[in-house]
Length: 193
Ligand code: 5GP
Image 1: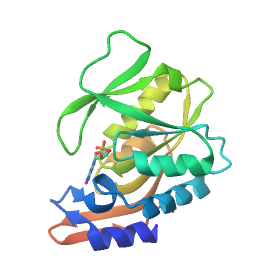
Image 2: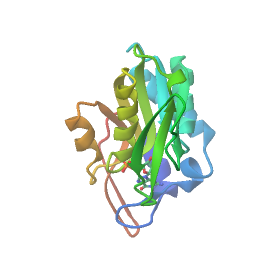
Image 3: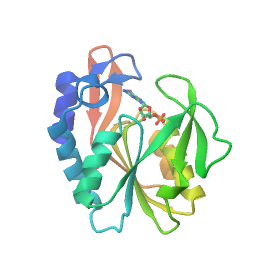
C-alpha cells in the first residue's frame, strides 16, 4: 500500500536494526484518514469471503481493525493483554512473549465473543516473529472457529513471522513489507496489496 509506505518514509524512525517506531501515526498518535484508507484496502481484499468478525490485539491494532470491520460490516473484537491467568470465568487464554518489551502476557478472549461457526480475520499493526498472531490464532482455534486470514500493516520480512504463520497454514496479507532496518535506513520490498 503506497500511502502507508510513503507515511513510513516520512515519519517512521528505525530505533535499531529490528524496531521501527511509528508513534506519530499508528502507535501513539493515530492518523484517522490513513486508518480509514487501510480499512478500505483490507476490506477490498477480504470482502465476500464470509468473514464474520475482525479480531485484533490491544492496543495498536484497534484503529485499523475497527475501520476494516466497519467496511466489512462485521463486529470487531479486541483480544486483551492480561498480566495473570483468569482461573474462573468463561475465557480462552494463551501466553505470549512481547517482541518489543520482552515481557509476557496472557492474551485473553471472552467465550461470549466467539462461536464455532465464526470465520475470523486477524488484523495487527506489526508482524515480527509471529508471536502475537500465532497466539490470536490459537485462541480462535481453541474456540472451534476458523481463521480466514491475517492482515498486517507493517511486516518486517527479515524476521521469521511470515514463515511461521504460513507453515502453520495461515494466509498472511501485508500492506507494507520492510526488508531491512538500520540507522537512517528503512528498506522496502513488494507487499501483498
Ligand atoms: P510478533 O508477535 O510478530 O513477534 O510482534 C508483533 C507485535 O509486536 C505487534 O503486535 C507489535 O505491537 C509489536 N512489534 C513488533 N515489532 C515492532 C516494531 O518494529 N515496532 C513497533 N512499534 N511494534 C512492534
